[in-house]
Image (cartoon, rainbow, N blue to C red; front, side, top):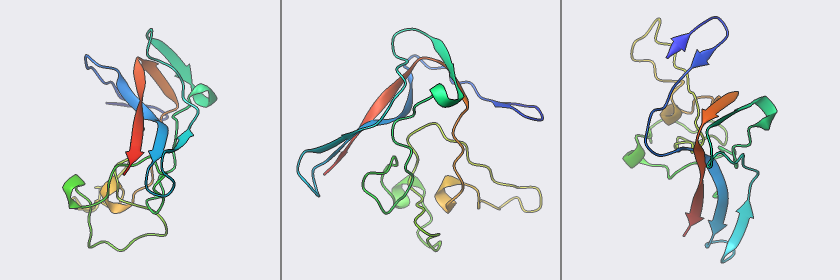
Length: 140
């Protein structure tokens, strides 16, 4: 990571395109085969860069009370703190889009209040370069 006064740069080097978000959710619980599609920026064919409003992450709903959210399952298997009190409708489920969470360890090195497992605030990227793909979420 590289820090400047206004920019945080992160690189992902992998043989497969990164997952940029959830494009399609199929809910087989509430209404069988109920499908919802979300706007998604195609980046699977050729490396490219997109900025600001051009980036469409698919679903960016991080409300853990909704099965239609863009998070994986809650619970101790993904490191969630089940003892922490819920904060409004937030969840400790892991976000599917690339998301930055910030914890301030300056005064207390054990402080994790900004982490996703502790209901931190998600920050989405403002620029994406490379190849990426969408994920599909099925609720059963």
